[in-house]
Length: 274
Length: 274
Image 1 (tube, one colour):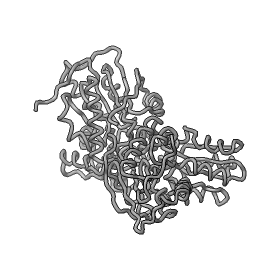
Image 2 (cartoon, one colour):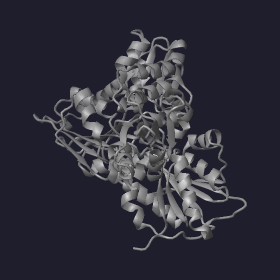
Image 3 (tube, chains in turn brown, purple):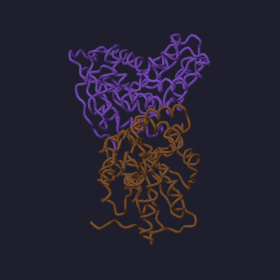
Image 4 (cartoon, each protein chain N blue to C red):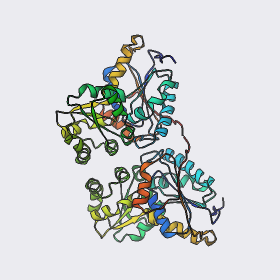
């Protein structure tokens, strides 16, 4: 099978997540690639993915990827750590365009950042159970120690907008304390929701610990891919952000516009699967 | 259209919820009707329903109800407040067996319990936004005052098993304080997950406030329905609890057996819809 090629320079970059978390990736893509059109799909009818099985997450990821390709996306950015961990390895080669997950770029950045060799990873229950980060980091350097913990309450707290709140801080403190005691010097935010808590996490971790933001590193990987195919770069003067959701979602626009400063050209609801 | 009739005395009572919450209803049914077979469906592939739209919750409820009827259920107990509020009114008459939600029995019990005429209701975002409890209570007594608040963090905390935890207490205190200050004397636990927090809620509310448990009142309504059709009652000496989930779920058995003391005959995963 030959490597998939980007389809058309004026085609949008396709991005998907189970819900709003992937918007942190969109915000980073906007910064890194200001001229690109973006088509974002949020699977709000079935959100969250983080506690579901590999089989179910793979089925959902396939349905959303099919939709992005049918809408003309020139690549698929899987802006969801759970789908990147559970689905990307088994479905990436089935598509005619490149598929980039958030996991490998985040793992590479963590390996680059650590000095002590002790890396912490936080993520959803499914991401952590898959051990995908641990494996990706160890593939790059088998000598590194990886301490991973599932933080299932963070996504609901973020979806409720409690970004600067004493309850969120208490929850974070409980999740992070054991890792901090073990002396990690690098923490991977292994869920695309988590960059929204960066400030709260920073206040608990202190300034000596490197925070690896999977959204930021995923955007850099997309930028690299486009640079290596310069004819595929878009030079639109008025780039669009179009959003499809699988269920209507009240909180979506609020987070997109207020917390991330994104401006949205169109937002529609489209049924996917059942 | 004639009223639906119960199909067969040896057929199971069908019960469904988005996930584990409805097991509190199963526990109450077991207590009230020890001889009945129960078939429970948990839609764990699409859990939770509480933040989703009426259209989507109705579609999911219809698919699960179709499954229960095809499996021979003699009635459908909608052990989910969100589905009871958003879907039951529009789909109940489409089925050949009776459909009982948790909402009307809970509203009736609250009206019976209040002395001061000030009732509080807690539930998911979708249940509260529907105003279904407020309307059901006011239909029974238009003079009562109803104060309803969405508590979207409680389900994730319960699913994490933090039933007796200072974080859960802090969250509960924040949700409940404004209602308590307004002088409610009755609190409707308008989500089938919430009875698992009864002890924590009681410690915050004190002993003067009546807690209306939607699981308990729903079981009583089912008991009434069976009493009014005595030929349909089952007298099985070895009643079964069979469970179908739409996605494999690690936490399910733990909660069912440990927190609720349920014994399960069979547990299988069955794909529903997509």
